[in-house]
Length: 319
Image (cartoon, rainbow, N blue to C red; front, side):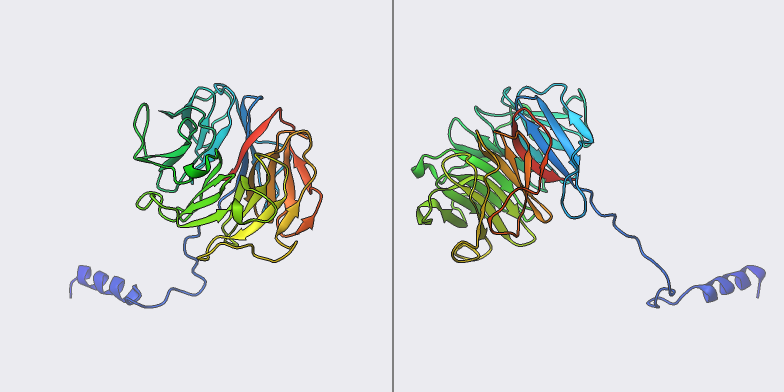
């Protein structure tokens, strides 16, 4: 046997057989946990603030990034899975900023929106859902749409109620939530089957008044929180199940309601879920993001107030 053949035999003998187990103590590649942040659109302040969030879901009181160079009255806000930020302001343009953009950073993409595009969101495939305030519907744009690109279609199945949109949310499974004073409309497949909502939580079925306005989705518990009242008013908040065929409050009596009275001279403009907490943006007094325990029902006072803004609008939790 030649020396090359001997070397080859030795190498093959040292290799583990196919299908054999890995050596004890071997650790495969690990995926680093995603660091989450609270994003706040300060309408009058002309800025987007980003706050780090700890493991419990509590935002840090100090922002680590402020984006304020080219924004004019930002109100709509969304964050994709990579941490890119999407903003609408008085220019009626959807602007996308790269992850970590701060100061006077320029957008990496712009899309012409319609009149009064206050609310928007983006799904994990890149589809954009943008409020069309002029026609009271939600325009759906293809991934990568820019400039004057037209939407794929528009969703407007609540027009019989003549109510404006108060929140647009897309969860990680691609379900679209549209909140109006008529109720919360849920579309399981807003791209392929958008003509009719999959589930509806109607205000007329609620004994204490209209539900809608600020809305937040808690995917871990498969529930959403929506504020009752006319427009962006201060609570109460109802916790409702959205995975059943018929959406009903998760509890009976006072259980599903969170009563908050900490935002005065204004109301809760928007909401988000962060770990153990329900976050609301108070555009009254104090002009802050108010933090509540999402699992404590009945009347409760805020756990903490985050930030000191001029007029906080939409808030989001994302990478």
